[in-house]
Amino acid sequence: MDVQKIKQRFEIIGNSVNLNRAIDIAKQVASTDLSVFITGESGTGKEVFPQIIHQFSTRKHGPYFAVNCGAIPEGTIDSELFGHEKGAFTGAHDSRKGYFEFTNGGTIFLDEVAELPLATQVRLLRVLESGESLKVGSSTIKKTNVRVIAATNTDIRKAIQTGKFREDLYYRLNTVPIAIPSLKERNEDIYLLFRKFASDFAERYRMPTISLNDEAQIMLLNYEWPGNIRQLKNVTEQISIIEKNREINADTLHKYLPNYQEIKLPVIYKSVDQKTFSTEREILYKILFDMKNDMNDLKKLVLEIMQKGTDKTSIQKNNAPLIQKLYKSIEPIANQESSDHLEIKRPENSNIQDTEEIIEESLSLEKKEIELIKKALEKHNGKRKYAANELGISERTLYRKIKEYNIS
Ligand SMILES: Nc1ncnc2c1ncn2[C@@H]1O[C@H](COP(=O)(O)OP(=O)(O)OP(=O)(O)O)[C@@H](O)[C@H]1O
Ligand SMILES: [Mg+2]
Image 1: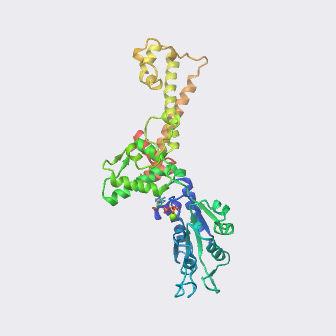
Image 2 (image 1 turned 90 degrees about the vertical axis):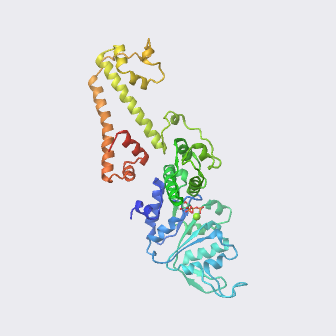
Image 3 (image 1 turned 90 degrees about the horizontal axis):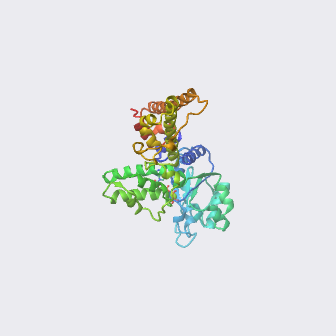
């Protein structure tokens, strides 16, 4: 099963390289019995990874058990994980099996593993090193066959430095590390996730789907998202329920983003007119595209000058819209008595043939682009999502291009 299919099966939204890589590692490591250590900020989506690993392992028919180590009181955690014998402590009227025993032959997911007390860490280390588990109050060793997957959203190295987490246990758990990217590290997925959540909540609450105007989209991308996907999901849900006007503007969105800091956008960004962009790549793409168009216009102009000589009036008349577009800052042609700064002298040894060739090539680039888009759409039976994926551009860029080139 490839990464895309895993995403569909486990309802994972996103297409960033680092997310795909994390899924790919999970899939690769699943068939081994190695311990896996999952790290990532809070709300990044760590909890689905142990399930992927379990489902693709030979243990998939065995039990899967997720334990939130941070939610079990320190006094009972040993007993919960490893079980206890009758009379092991006050109130232990019967002997009890622990999670490790229940999970025999399967996979145990130790979530928030950094919260384990040091004494429990010693017991866990023993299980990992020798497969031996010891019930509280018992001296009889039991063999367990459990695969351990652990996760944390804290800085585990800091916990080791401060003596809160055993280094030897860390190395045992960390045989294969999987780092789940924060939302900021997968910027291109933010809008995708928003749209998915917006449509899910619209369906759940039977209301029209909310959408963001251009400004709000930029705000969504610029926000830090300290709570990552969980926060994005919550914000989308709140807006979906509360806001009557279903097209959300930046002012409205701002109310839902705590500590939103207005980011000074780079000058280059401002030079692009306020269209909708989801990623920096798209911005650069757009700039390059505009530059290419300007180049083409300039080449056409230069070609005409070279062909018709320096008859300023007729050139300006024939190309008024083009000149206006290229030199936005100058006075309108009609009002211009003198246009010295537009004086273009025919270069000596000019080679018209060369210029024509360049124009041809440049225009054919555009054709190539149209051709590629058509091919990708044909290949994926008109499914834009997959076609965009194949072309290495976002779905939105593809949509824009289809409109721009009028591709049916
Ligand atoms: N790629 C994704 N696509 C869709 N929903 C996602 C994705 N990743 C996470 N979510 C959703 O985000 C929420 C948070 O995910 P999860 O509980 O796995 O976070 P976590 O990494 O375990 O956070 P914490 O460290 O705080 O426990 C869940 O509701 C989950 O369904
Ligand atoms: Mg979690």
